[in-house]
Every structure is written in C-alpha cells, then in structure tokens.
Length: 291
Image 1 (cartoon, rainbow, N blue to C red):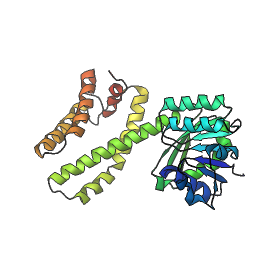
Image 2 (image 1 turned 180 degrees about the vertical axis):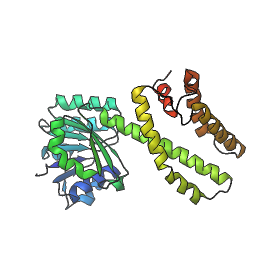
Image 3 (image 1 turned 45 degrees about the vertical axis):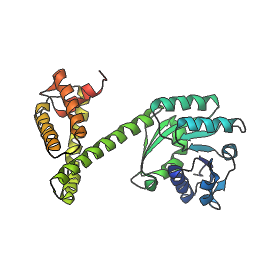
Image 4 (image 1 turned 120 degrees about the vertical axis):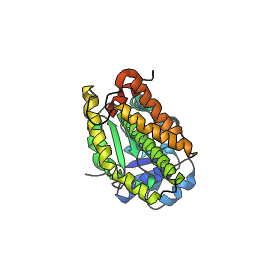
C-alpha cells in the first residue's frame, strides 16, 4: 500500500516526534510550524511549507499536533481561506476532551473533510516504540484506509469505533490512572524516606505489585458490569483501617497528608452510601456521580 502524503501542522516536542516517525517510515511529508525555526531540522528530509495552507494543499492527510483544539481550529480556518480542504482526511492528535472532538468533527464535516480523532499516551521519545499507545475514533472506512500509515506511530494502536469522543475519553481515563498511581507511589516513597527506609527496596516492591493491580482490575470490571460488589477478599471497612494508618503515619512524620486524605474521603463517601461490607470496586458507584 502506498502511503498518503501527510501534512504535519505543529512541530513542538510531540509534533516533531510524530514528524520524525513519518519520515523514518517513508511517509511523504510536508511540515509547517508558526515558528519557522522549528522546521529547520526537517530541511532535506521533508518538504517545508511556508504556510499551513501550502502544507494542506499538497497533502492527502492533515495531522494536527498543536497546543489545543482551539489553536487547531484557528490554523485550519486560516488554511481553508487559501486552499481547498474538501476530500482530505483530518487526523487530530492534539489532546482534549470529548466535547472538543465533537466540535472539531462538525468543523471538518462543514469543510468536506473526513475526520479521525486520535489521542496518544506516550512521551515524545516513545513515539514509534512499543511504549506508545494510540487511540482512534471515527468512521471505520476512513480508519481502515489509513491504518497502515497511522500505526507507524505507536506499538499499541486501538480503533475504538465511530463515537468521535471515544479517543479523548480513553486518553483522559488512562492518564488519570497514570497520574493518580504515580502520585500515590511518590507519596509512599516520601513515607519510606521519612523513616530512612531504602527507596531501592520500596521501588522494587512497587513493581512487584503489578499482578495485584491486574487482579483488582479484572475483578472490578466484572463487578461493575453486574452492579454487584459482594466478595470475600476485603471490605471497604478494612481498607479504611489501612488508609487511616497511612494518614496517621504521614501526620506523625510531618509529610503531606493530602494524598491519603483524598483517598479516605472517597472511601468514606462509599461507606456512607451503604457499601461498607462491599469490595473495593464499589467505589465506582459513588465516583460515577458528582453528588
């Protein structure tokens, strides 16, 4: 299959990493950035356009990697005034919310463009490696036509269907898990440090918790799907006792208590809702509402 000509709009750290990957995999590429200096590394390796319209004009697929969706709309509005975008495919790789994806889809449809909303969970240096996760949402026919080109960008590529907000939703959810887990991990490191306990041993055991987290994820998926949270592993009351110990030690040792305090607040809300004897997955029921 012949790769389509791609226009890469936006050459920040992530945009440059994406552009470098396209070049490395033989995708015909034109690049553009508001700051021309960011295009210099691509001289002789890709076509460097002097405007977003010029980049779009020669492309089959337009890829956006800008600061946010509003910046993308601004750039595309300027381009649409100077070139025809109808018939091209727009791949949005700027992070945003599901509502942003729906807004961009309306804009793309108004201008006769096919639209794939996508999200990438990776640091720029992970683009193109097994560590990079990419999520795609949009018309299946469009995804299938460009699958080979798009999947150059990551090791895990997940097509999520035609609900256009799906990629942004999954990215936010996965990143929340990453940020929350990382924050709790580092708070645990602070606890160990406060007692001069070797962090090498702590981080080794953190990695060893992988199977426990996998088991919790599997059990939670099943319980949430059924709406039933009975089990014989550990009730929320028992978990609260453990969290209370973490709070007390954090206070005694003079380290930040906000992480265990926030965790405790979520558990107490679930217990107040009548889930004291339920398994940990019952937290979902109260987290799923903002009341």
